[in-house]
Length: 171
Image (cartoon, rainbow, N blue to C red; front, top):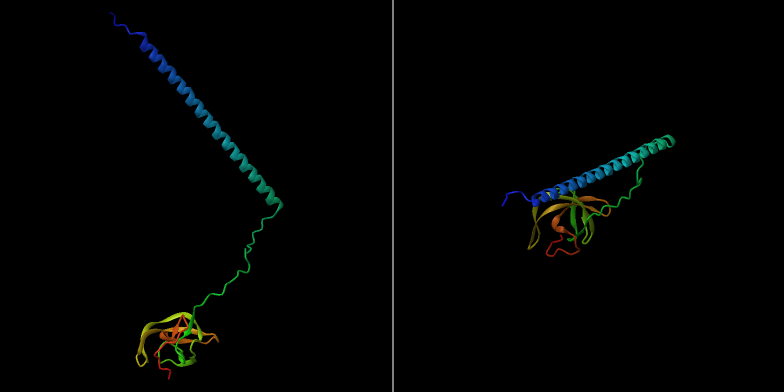
């Protein structure tokens, strides 16, 4: 027996070589087609930019650029802010010039009278005996009557709902 190499290794080498050459040709063609696509896209974008620049020059030559600022909505609709309404729950409650019993009485308010809450409440609460068996510890609330008068009322004497505070001395 002889140790001569057979024909099979040569055929394998030849097949692998042909496959490798085919792969290289395919890769080169793919790269060149991608390269051409990028060139075409760059040429298209350059052409579009040139067209846009020339249009801008034409328009600026023909129509002067108006740089004045014009409001989109010159008179915006301003909705009246909804102010919370409170109701007086004690007939004849005193509205005062400031929070506290020592402040001057401005007006006496009737039971169920509507007042607007002005968004201010005293920093502290005050304990007041309102009746024989009724003591409240509430802050003072700034309100405005429907006639436009502003002042402070005791917090226990107003509520968001119409009702009478029971057990209050109205003298």
